Length: 227
Image (cartoon, rainbow, N blue to C red):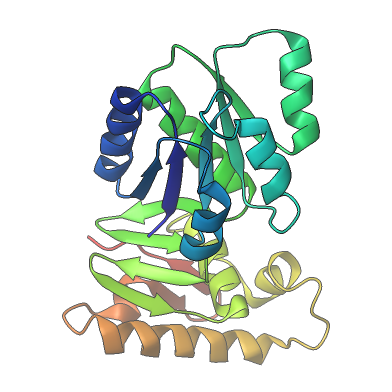
């Protein structure tokens, strides 16, 4: 599950944002000052931080500068300041995006998802509880979590981008494994076999061979969403 750290001193805003984030299927952690931001980041390892500029004890820019000394975690800055100079200061500190107050929780959630996707952490390939999450290379289905290797994840992620479309082994080699010269077309078969085996072990009630990756003999493979 994607973990979002919210650092906002206005408690009503923080609670509203946290509630919306949880409703969208993410986990939220809330701090109301900058005092323990660094310790929380190191302990909780959030996937993204929503960080207000004006905070008691330690401001958002200072927190961002300190975080960037040890982590490239995505940061979205919340600010009531709308001048170009304020944005430049934030960008120099390593902010990934800005959201100006007042804002809607829906807008912020869309910004969070966009930043996570750019960072390769979050993927919206989600059908009936199925979700691909690059944060650790997991495939999740409802309450089940399935660990994949980097290459298995890359293959499944590629096929799921266009459900139903058939890709040949040559196309998969070109688009998925173009930087891995040692990968053969038979390795693709092995990866697909391993993916099916891992999912079947976790989700016994689903016919994985038919519903996740389907083999079209003589043509290739396609991703078929769970119905």
